[in-house]
Image (cartoon, rainbow, N blue to C red; front, side, top):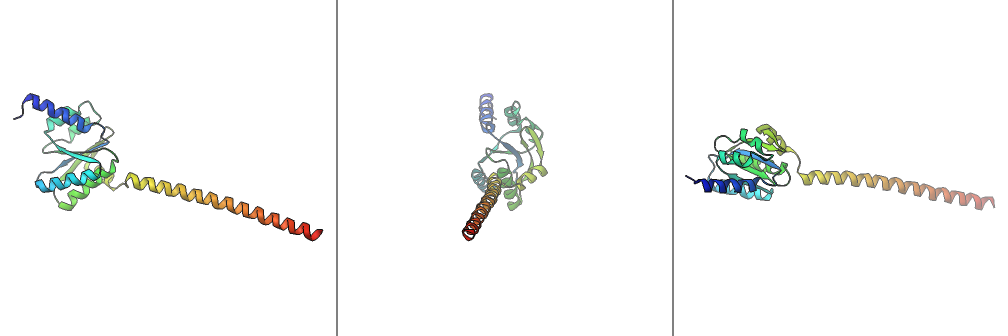
Length: 175
């Protein structure tokens, strides 16, 4: 059993773990092998996310004054917490896809901006396009708009040039 000093050290580590997090996803990883959990953590690394397994009481103490305080309702039974530090949709996508692929574990819910999410809401978050996909579609829209404006300006300039040419021809024929 951990001593009081060790528990305080773990709470400090957990506070650091939650610091700068954008989203927290609570999962039940019971039944997964060590190799599966290791593979899961490696997948999370590519999503700028981390997984931590700790006692629920220590998790609750570490989050009681943070925006992740709502995690208290979700951390019941064996819990693993996934924290996403960048795009909130990417860790959710990674968690949902991995647990679906191995047919083990479950998503209990999550917390984003201080609000608790149900497991269905986390799955809905996983279906959202990534930040990069959203930015590229916005840039594509802006680019096509700019192309449209450039095409219109080009057409106006072309029409003015044709009109000037016609006026010049008319003036030459009249003279």
